[in-house]
Structure formats: C-alpha cells, structure tokens
Image 1 (spheres, rainbow, N blue to C red):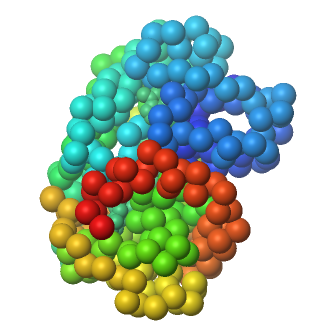
Image 2 (cartoon, protein in one colour):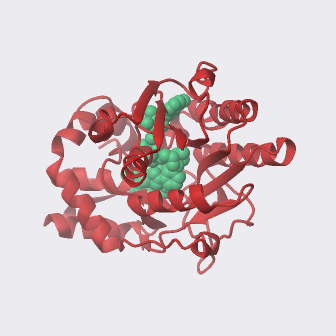
Image 3 (tube, rainbow, N blue to C red):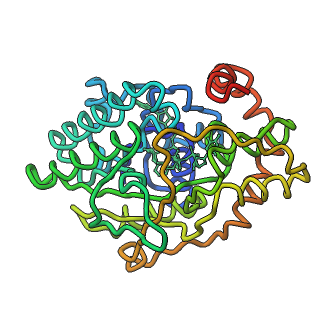
Length: 331
Ligand code: NAD
Ligand code: TDX
C-alpha cells in the first residue's frame, strides 16, 4: 500500500509513520510536511534511511503536491495548526491550513481517485460536554475556539465530498493525545518540562477542566484499525476512556518528578475554555480496538522520555517558543 501522510513531522503523524513502517514492512510512506514551528524531522530519525520512506517539504494548501501524490492509495491528513491558544491569538493560519489545506487535499483525492482519504479530526469539534454525558459520532458540532471551528469546518467539507462526489472519506475524532515528542506548548509536555526546570506550571482557571487522555501509540493502533477495517463515509470517535482534571495531572507530574506542589501557579483562564471533553467510541470498539495503555503507565513513559531527551525539547524552548510562552503567560 502507498500511503501519503501529511503533517508527518509533527507529534502524532511521526509516531504513526514509525508505527506503520514497522508494522507493515512492505508499505510505502510519503510524508508531506511544511515544517512549521511544530514540525521536527528529528522525530523521524529512525526511519529517514528506510527505502520505503520519503519526505517532501511542502504546504498542503499548495497545488505542487498534486504530482507528488500520484499513484498513492491512501491520504491520511494529520497536517494542521493544532494549538488552541495560538488559534486564539492568530486564527488566520488555522483557517488556511485546517480548512483550505483540507479542501486542497480533497480536490486532489477526487481528481486522482484515491482509495481512501482519512481526515484526522478531534473530539473538540463537539464542544464542551455536560457532566456524565458523552458525545457520539451523531452529536452536533459545537466548537468553541478558532482551532476547533476550523477542524469542524474541515469535517463538514470532508463529509460533503463523500455525499457529492462519492470521494471515499473517513473521519477520525480522537481525544487528547499525549506521549513522547509532543511539542512543549501542549499541557502535559509543557508541565513536565517546566517542572524539570523548576519553572512555574501555569494552570488555567480553577484547574478542574477535564480532558480524556489517549496515549499516542493507542491512537496509532486506532488509526491502523480504521485504515484497514473502517467503513467509507463514516466518522469514528476514538476515546482514551481516562478522564482527568488538569490539576490531578499537574500533581501527578510533580509527584513523578519529585518536585514541590508550590510550582503550580493558577493563571487567568483561556477564553472560551471548554470545561470537559467526553466521547463514546462503540464504533471503533466494534472493529476490535480498545486502548491498552493506562494513564498512569503512559504518563510515566512520557515523563521518563522528557527526562531522557532534554536536547530535543531544550532546543525548542530556548528559541521561538520561549518568546511565545513569555507573551502568553506573562510569567
Ligand atoms: P502537531 O502540531 O504536533 O503537528 C502538526 C504537523 O503539521 C507539523 O509537523 C507541521 O509542520 C505540519 N503542518 C502544519 N501546517 C501545515 C501545512 N500547511 N502543510 C503541511 N504541513 C503542515 O499536531 P499533532 O498534535 O500531531 O496533531 C496532528 C493532528 O491530529 C491534527 O490534525 C490535530 O488537529 C489532530 N488531533 C490532535 C490531538 C492532540 O491531542 N494532539 C487530538 C485530536 C486530534
Ligand atoms: O499552559 C496550559 N495550562 C493549562 O491549564 C495549557 C497549555 C493548557 N492548560 C489546560 C487547557 C486544557 O484544559 O490543559 C488542558 C489541555 O490543554 P492543551 O494541551 O492546550 O489541549 P486542548 O486545548 O485540550 O486541545 C488538545 O486536544 C485536542 C490539542 O491541542 C488539540 O490539537 C486536539 O485537537
């Protein structure tokens, strides 16, 4: 199978490429990535010499990628601007990449007759869930941030291509991923790396917002399952089934790193901050998938990885990110 992965130099995409090449040694993967601040080819060091792996630095909004995808069977679109706080400060790139980039890939899929177009979406498109309620794939879209609104818009476009042109699409909406190689602006890697450096952990609001955490390799297994067994025209939710308040996670990270709780600093809430994310995922469970990594184990693996790979994140935090971080949290 010839698979085009877009956004494969980012967090989830890079794990997925490594997973796919290991699991299916005869598959060929073309990674198309613009290498924005979030793209990092170091994430792919172990496969860069693999003859079945190729990399193309390009923007998914650009028509030049049309020739590159020639002859591919599947496109899996991970490429996106993915950080909610950045979308609040600078929404435009989110519309360009997440909406127009998806549009460009759909057009290419339609013209080239790809066998499958898989859109990597998010549970955030459903918006905040009331206590004890979980959204299903049929729930209405109710996004809160420019990020989730752009992802929801892309989902609607993807579904329209299925209805109008019979483009063979599938949408995957997963809960919050965590694990090694996640850019340290996201909650878990930001808090781990700050704690290692004895810097404050900026906890938004009262710290009681809830996210459902999915270890990144469990998500790779879910995408694999859907790639091979998923039904065309269908949306699949993928839930970690491990809902935690942010403050619980902050305390666990400090406990694992043997750092004091006084590092937690409550800061003003994120505008439009969704209180809780929760989704049901019976559809993918019916295909035989379930998460295998408990939150405790996944968090330990993640903390250990950041402890042992300081070069990876220190390079990032000492550069452009530091400026952004100072502006954002005024710490
Ligand atoms: P990430 O920010 O780590 O990586 C995004 C990648 O896309 C980067 O390599 C970047 O260079 C690339 N990219 C950005 N704009 C591009 C463009 N115009 N053209 C080509 N490449 C471009 O993101 P991630 O956390 O790995 O998320 C991957 C996907 O999964 C995204 O679509 C995101 O919305 C979705 N998702 C993420 C999570 C999560 O918790 N991280 C949860 C659910 C869904
Ligand atoms: O400094 C912080 N302090 C804090 O309290 C940051 C960065 C986050 N938080 C809170 C906000 C959220 O309640 O932690 C929670 C998780 O925040 P993020 O890591 O920014 O993730 P979230 O907003 O939930 O969105 C993520 O999950 C769904 C990803 O960034 C998206 O790409 C994905 O679609």
